[in-house]
Length: 318
Image (cartoon, rainbow, N blue to C red):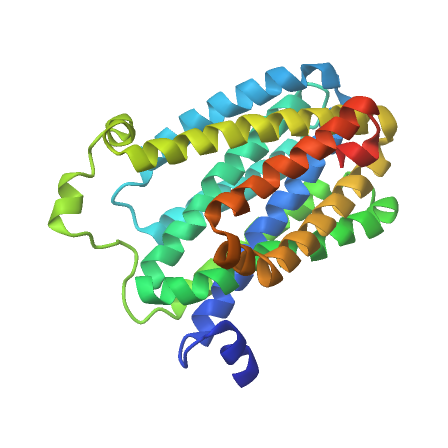
């Protein structure tokens, strides 16, 4: 334990909270990975992939509306209780959808998984923000966030390995099970709390500005506006790449093969991102700066897109 504390800079007394939040995030990301694998496989193998662009648009609109509604409902609520209620409802919804799976449920499932992701991931970080101070966050959010890489590796390769035995029909129940496990971990986190962290305390000035429109914030703060532009451009780019990849994959593989492919992809992404994050990111940023670090992605995307244009096969899409 002392070695782990030194590696991740965990101070005495922080081990239990850090470990519980690590497991909580692991369960959440595992549910998302299995859920996304299920929705992608069902939609591409059992529905018409030609409708994928429309699903992207519908999903974006639904996620935006849900996020705005969620923010309004969640205000001044006990974060722990509210998270447990929403988590239980979302987990149950996957079981209900699994019972009524048919051709016209697959588009609904596709959008619903995106909505679930848009709710539970920000919800997790809001809870961590109520439990750790800003000084702790700088040290501990990195190790806690590493649970995502571990989830990608373990769950991704598990899907690839066991899909031929289990089949795709158990994917949604497994995703639901991970969400229920996350509720148990959330209860454990709340139980070991020594005081009420459910409502974050804000300075008077921040409370005064809490009702300011997000559009006014973006308009009046150039830094936030530029970040928003980066997020928008990145999202458009990722959506185009995702569309190319899924269309080529649907034309290449059967249902079980698609599930194994997506599992392998999540596993490789977890390995690669974890390796790069640990050994390369800080060195690149320290030696070359943020601009060069940001240029790495578009350069490699440009190279792979060139190959994909010349020969639209699955390896270049991957």
